[in-house]
Image (cartoon, rainbow, N blue to C red):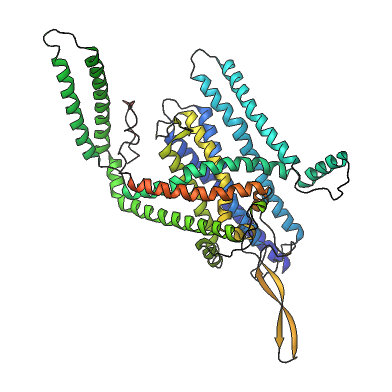
Length: 542
């Protein structure tokens, strides 16, 4: 029986990993379509395209590992609190190590992308914009700037490796003994602290990106779907009126020189501006005419009710997320051990909607994992929407705009790097919403409960299942590998706590701004671009 149970369990695990493999293929297909959709057709480069697709895929694969991690630790135990027949100590350790090595691999690849690959490709194409430089000069310059990022990465790894998480038991130990103790700590953690510190530092930057882009995207994406875009016919009518008005101004200025008198410098400047404006309006007229007569516009018009439904669904998910995050943060403010512990709280004194919903969904496999996956993917898609709406800024300087079919290679690399950083912060956001679930999944453990028996006129003990929490014995409940990476350093947890409050404030501001803004132009970014292409325009923004 034990052999049959082990075989059945192995078969289910194989099926699970096959599903995960299909998910990876779907992620790669999505990344290819997404990058090709936004990259500029005139400036597309093979290396930048491959880098963008690979980086975006790594971001999505890393986010998909969280529900897998939770599923595996939950799958090893029965609902009555006992381990399954096949889940002995060796098997459990193998599963934990597999997930841990998965995190090691993905996080190492993220460090490689953020500090080496993406900077090199970015600076390589920055130098390529200068026509006087050759290939060797481009590579040398790119390597020179990339070396600075490599130094930063090395420093983060070294600091993380030797930050003492515990102190030597002997306070009178010599300096050499203290150094030896640090190396022993490094060896016992297998580099986990070094990698965790580096990833936590990037997660801190990802938190700032999430506050800037994701918080706004969570309000902008659903409201844009609900409001839709302006009518192409109405925009053409407005554009025609603008053309007539500009032509009248041009005729008025030219009429001043009919008798042979030269125009004043002021009139020449005004005439040049009006002629430039007229060219832009005529290009816009051609774009609007193409969009109005395209089949895609008619198809999107037929899907308008579906877009409204999606918008309502997304705003409900956003409200669920925001209310749960507010109550979770409020619980930490009232019941945590304070800033010195990183505002860590075990269990939940204030229930939030997500924390209440997940235990209910756990009774029907795999609804809870589906919900976690939906929240993670929603978090990523709203981040993409926020980056598209806001653009890429360096403080008050706008560096790049993300536009369908017209995004430069450097902008795509920036987009993928930002998404990589935001995905790192996603795990902590999910932990903030449901800490106990992220730590232990649906695991139960057995406790001895005293029961009074009338027959024997005394007390007897009976094992009763209880949900795994911080008080559970270590050999009875397996902690997810995600949690180990999240809470190695208390000061990062404290920073994430205050970042959650900032996230809520920016979401409310973004919600107000999105409600006050009118409908978007049917030509995405047309109001900001004076360099509308004469090529066939893209209509997929309708």
